Image 1 (cartoon, rainbow, N blue to C red):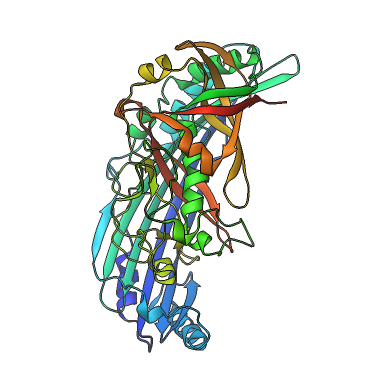
Image 2 (cartoon, rainbow, N blue to C red):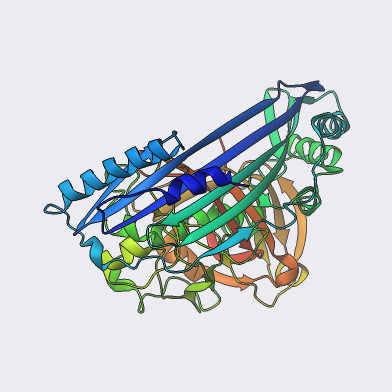
Length: 477
């Protein structure tokens, strides 16, 4: 929990700003890893500090500090206020018109109070899976690890709003490399997409126990498999690849600050334009995409964003029609469009910007068996391994770790280095089947990059398995 002395220091703040807010972040990250049966050095990182934001007239100013004493916080507020005053006459945005937080509250990750194993127990558990992957001389590298992150956040305003949020993130990971005759194939447990909030149950959700032998077996399958064929096929993407597809070709294109041009000189902007909302057919009628911070085990669930806006579920795309962008309070005021509570910062020393959070596809009505049975000439792909998308987030090419052909309604031969490509504006319109709730899985990653200066943040993606018709599939080199 946040040290209450920091909250007491914040209550002493005085200034001439029309509005000010304080966000304190105290985060600890513990990494445990075993590689080729050797425990790696334990790594613990603790980082804490505060961001002060002030509004004066039309202007806004920011200042961050690692000094959480009353004097340190006051000095940062004074700097933020001076910057806001200096920018007031030059601001392109009238910050007096931006919605201000009015609700206090709290949030705690599920099972955050349940104890986790100690370091010795973690290493024994990881060592067991690492050893279990050693099933064949062709297995040349084995890695098992878990990252535990505790993040406490305190948000306060000069108007008396207080928000406390406590997060615990657990990310197990496992990777196996097989090599023979000049060929190396890697198979992993979700390719660092197995991030969730909670406790030890996160390992069970991703099937970590027993994964060593299973993943090693699949790596050997890939080693002996032919290369993925090229041509047009129906494509069945499993949830751990849907995560990447949603992230790159829906999430980033719908970030409202990117649509407004903020990322243009750094990571590109978007093929989506403000006038498309309410009229653009983003996908087939089967596509339903939600911003959902209420699915509590997902990586980016929270009760309030980092500007103090209460978070709730919204449809971004409904029955294929584009309804709403991923824009927080500032971008909503700029664009005069409705948005969501997604102003988020990667840490205490960054201001909030528009970020995807939990971006999910709602389940359909088909089981996995039904989807496979309805495919005559297709391929199933799992687990992302490479990605490339243009600076408008439109044309893309993605690769996966594991492929399996589908012929006449049946899964057949395993293939290696499966890839596919498309154009976002057309790809989602080819969505021809959406799996039911039994096919849906929740994934997340801590590695979404955006912003200048850079911000690396956690996002979540829940998705059922999905089928896309007549996709350009090809093998790797």
